Image (tube, rainbow, N blue to C red):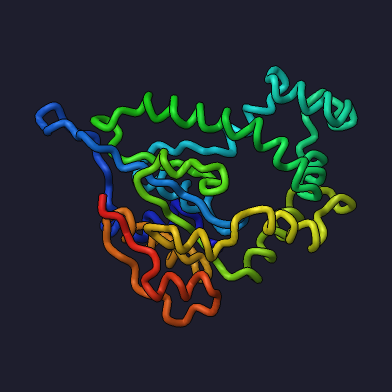
Amino acid sequence: MSQSLNTLREQRGSTDLKLTQPSASQTPISDQRVIGLTGGIGMGKTTVSDYLASAYQLPILDADLYAREAVGPDSDVFQEIVERYGVGILLANGDLDRRRLGKIIFSSSAERLWLEQRIHPYVRDRMESQLQALPAEAYPTVVLVVPLLFEARMTDLVTEVWVIQCASVQQVERLLERDAKTSPEGDRLSLEQVQARINSQMAIEKKVACAHVVLDNSSTLDDLLSQVDRAIAGTPQAPQADASEPASRQASQGKSRLLQP
């Protein structure tokens, strides 16, 4: 997966389907296609959303960005966090030490629930307000990237659910590799800590069973983006006959269906 998205876009050429803004002579669009993109941590949501933004010029509403806003220095949630965990949860510059907070909440389901009960309502409000600012006539398709789409009960905000998945071994390897690139050597996540983050989310098999579109990120980047192209076009994906993961088997057996735009 070493090729960049831009390089692949150029190579794919006319196979990319472009979404254009409606002209004044076109009939106004009454229904908006709202894609809810989710999946397990480290399975490739950012890769897919970046491609949808660059290749199709789709608006992307990212729950992770809104969650960061929710714990910004001037927020009520930020103050509650400091009151609960003390000033030791802050960096030297006064910002929230998100890494330290992560270690706390992923080692205690009670602490994670406490934090989610404060962040999720903010994220939902931001999603709803941003959707209202994107009228269907100008933006016929919008993408909501929500890692906890099911867990946070936000499926009512979307018209179809896309789940990206890969083999569990690949997921762990990608998370360890990503952490090694962003964390100092003495403060990297252990295998147990990575597994705790994975286990904190709804099982990928259950997400796949609820999906309209399943994107398999177990192969190459080009293969993944081809699946995205077909999904945008409203064409069902071919079964993954050689998949070994239970989630892939569910997809190949037809337990998820593509919702036509």
